[in-house]
Image (cartoon, rainbow, N blue to C red; front, side, top):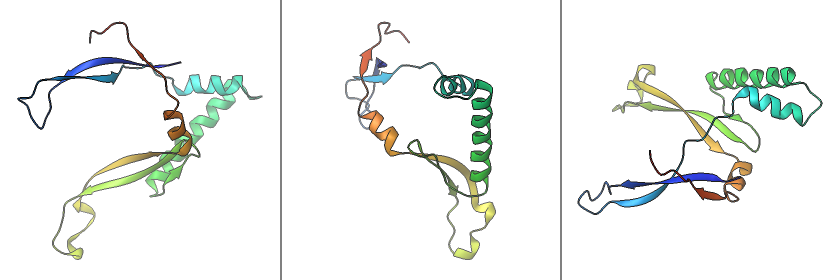
Length: 131
């Protein structure tokens, strides 16, 4: 298998007068959803697809719950999910209150398994360069 890419032409944002350059960009990939993952897991285990799907749905539910409780969630070799905050800066520590927080984000840090996978990728230029 390979990662398909196309070429795109971009302006240098630090020097808009410089000539545009061509860069590789990953093409839009198809999506493997939870149902398909359940089917793949079932093919490689003694569990049925509905059983695998139920486990994956449970995992999703508990990842949401644990993140909302302020906990980081480590999924083995896949990586870790954690919440980060964007907030207004205040002059004193006492001025920092919950309403100072403007936005929460979910950060994902890949685990060693995903990092290792990145080192083994093979790339292939897509045939159709339009889009």
